[in-house]
Length: 360
Image (cartoon, rainbow, N blue to C red):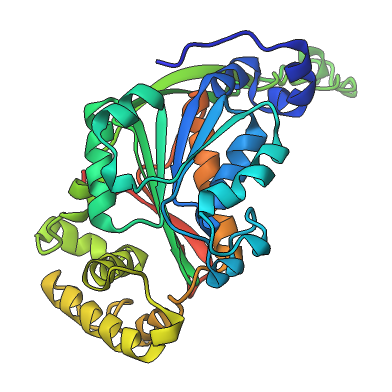
């Protein structure tokens, strides 16, 4: 439970537009929230930027890796002259400049070394970016046990995803209700009289139309862990029908998770040809394992094109996925509007985002 604090006059002026947009209570929740963002590459930078500008209470950046030349494709918070230094530490100065009113901390430890106490005692919400599946599942379970909201995401070339596990989330949404219009009434004197005299002119009809009434409606939504969302048995008849209408990006994510597990990294431009061969083999293995129908979008010509678009972390894709991810985080903290449940997937062929609910 986030303990709300009063907004100062200075903060009210700083966040005036936001307060007008989502209300004072939502801004109070943001100003009281403590967030951890793990992985400060391109996607992590986008999330950090958006949350700090929104005015959360405190943000901790954790990243054990050093800034590389390749980070220049999407990492915009660390100066280029900081290459070779810790990625999170190199980003600190620019992050603090975005909003001096937010407390920013840096942790250079490896995420895998953190125990449950670290997450449960210090944060209301945890965001994991650019980490492999095993680490995400591990931290996700720690957060579930500690009743902490959890998000994850990554970008692979033109493809990106985000995932959220909010356990059971309560929220309020605005619903507009329009009252039925009142029936018009015609003047009886307009009818012809018995002596067949010309009919009188009809009076103008008036219809009273009421303005839509906005009501706040409380709702709740249940979520599942990433582990459960990934172990769905797609060979069952109930799921086979769904496969035909699903975006292939969810199954592409399975391929990328398997690649990371085997290689310990995402697909690399420096090993493009070899990595592409491995991606195709993993894709075919997963398609066979899940019994995807022949000619499905993952294994057809478009599927082959997708695999060629999975290299590096592209800044425009990081901006899109990071923007959506931060938007969902703000919605969750403020308890306003319906959140995504539970995957957001950016299709590299169609250049569009889709939301898929998996694991229920």
